[in-house]
Image (cartoon, rainbow, N blue to C red; front, side):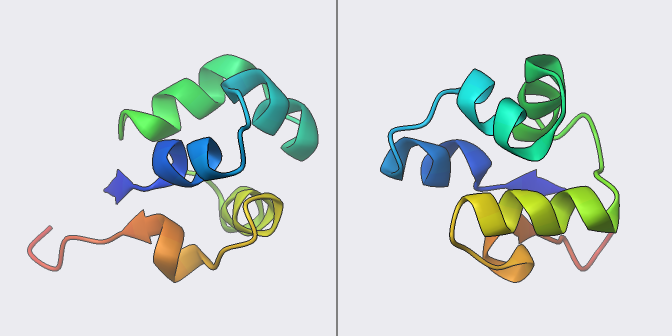
Length: 66
């Protein structure tokens, strides 16, 4: 799964650490999400979308073939 977390985080002038603190996870979790190495829970996806003033659909790009 691909994400637009890094792009949207940059728009809000937010570091990985800033976003991590806002949603209650470690910075490494944000890093793994951005690299597509970790699939978040629905709750975490919702919290990140809310923190970035976005929707889950805008934030996470699902590959229909997977």
